[in-house]
Image (tube, rainbow, N blue to C red):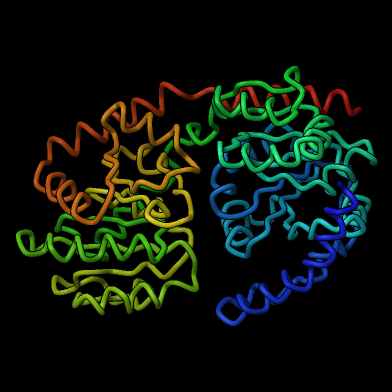
Length: 422
């Protein structure tokens, strides 16, 4: 089965490169560092920690873990790999020169073997759901402990893996530790073949971050720039499916709350202009954040066409919608606005954070909306009820405080792994 997988990866590689080239027409970062995609890196500092976080969402989850590791093991080289350029940008903006960054090679046996041989890490940490059979095998052959932190595995993935259960078991069995986000994730992982003795229920690291230093000042600066004496809806990490629900619902809200302001924060840079054009097509007066013109009272929709400002935007909001939840993306992190004490609206497609959303809804910190009409109805209620917004925001903050602890358990597991690799 592994031979067939490797053959499919070889056959698929030209199509992956074609995909990168097409993406590169909109984001030139996809056209760079292709040598890294094949494991060709300059041999750097060896014997450190390698952490893989595929894209922006995983990088956000990994941030408290990386900070803790840098503080605990300051003498160990630290490398972070991503797949997407947006993930790479997030790593650089969060950590600068404190960590090295490379793109994870394609899962070709030769590429991942070359990459690990040149880096020679003491430990590999993979965030959340990333399973790369040839990378995992290369780590095993080179006697490098490999763990999955903040692991989650959806019911859909379990059903898919059942068709190749023996192959998946051979991938998961050698893992030295897996930290599961929930009891259900732990059950899914053991059902798919992970050794139960190596699976630990840690909870979700995403509960760990507090309010970053300087964030409140940054949000106040944004509020001043935007003249946000108005009520503000921030729609964060949006995709087109989200915007086609949020924008018309907001237009309807303007009929009885004309001073409201919509802040759109698209998930990917290539969507900045398209999101602005979509908002204009619904008749909204739109401004781009990068235009640096402030935000006059006439502007109805501001599109944040810069990266790294989502949390500050959430902090400046009266109500937050978390994107990726009306399309096929499976929903993005709802805990970021919860940490900031904001009432949350989220769409029905939240496979990536199903249990988190259920917890937020159960404690009345979030409202799950099913369609445009439902979104408008709940948005109107929230925007007209200051006390309700405050109660929901406080409930979210209480939930976050109550569920901290995953970081400590994960750090303890990493300490054991590093001790055993000496």
